[in-house]
Length: 238
Ligand SMILES: [Zn+2]
Ligand SMILES: [Zn+2]
Image (cartoon, rainbow, N blue to C red):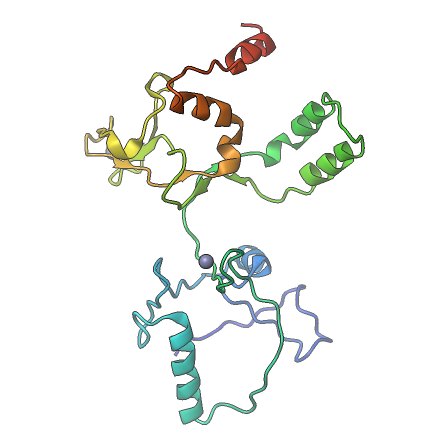
């Protein structure tokens, strides 16, 4: 068995139901907030392949494990009542399969400390229709977390980075090396000299969408000239 601590927290509404609020490790955003606020120790019960990693249920798919748990509760006579309920469940927007949260390492760009700068830049733009600026401003003000730029996909622009499994050092490609696919470029750690691990994740399309003209031009053998660099030079005064 596993003991669950009971703590007082202002997010529980004492008038609602039993007045007790359950926090599971990663049910939704509110659970993540509660974990942080109360410094709870999350329990990660399944692996990357979607199967459970806890004793008695190892290797089982979540839905199969649910059936087994229910059967065990029945056998022990611990079920008081069962009824059908309707509730909102997060699903994959493409195939409708239910999704579960799994904390994994991702790449982020720090933006929360740049809110006022982003709004300042937005004011330089001529907006059509004008009210779209207000929408932009509200969106920036409402940002709650930094920008996640990496995705676990097979295709995409590779993130030009390597990491050292031994000393945790992260190596970013030199600008002169770009474009580079880290999976096809071996590197050694400058500190401990061990072989570096290539970054397998790719950039999210929003991260590289402004590069689309450059990528398309490179596929055409550079025959199409893109004015991007000149525009950038003009802007920075170089
Ligand atoms: Zn899917
Ligand atoms: Zn190292």
